[in-house]
Length: 138
Image (cartoon, rainbow, N blue to C red):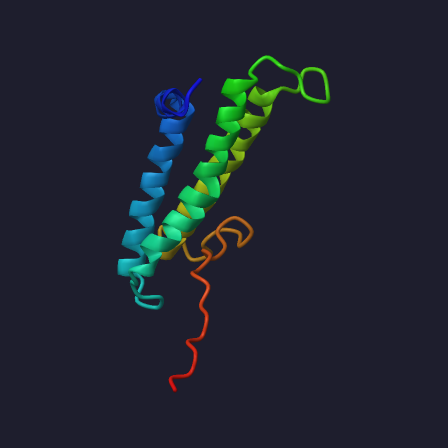
């Protein structure tokens, strides 16, 4: 299976379509929350943060596991019954849970979860772009 066929199969898989749909919902809610919430303000770096944390940090590793599933779909790994499909499905659940937590955080920022805002373990703060101080100008 070539890379083109793998990418075609990846984007046609319903799990991937659901994950990207939730990613788009998360992106829209996060953008609206940043525009509405006056305490944090809106910065264009939020778009880069979304690409870095959600696409590169979640969907690209899931693509690698999906490729392993397509390559060795029926082969058991170390434990009988544990194959790449089981690992890929577990990773899919983790990716969806991470997107769900981010969506809940955006709903908390919009004030739609009430005064409490939900438990901080689930609706914690979003990661921000790491900042490095600029070198002094000579």
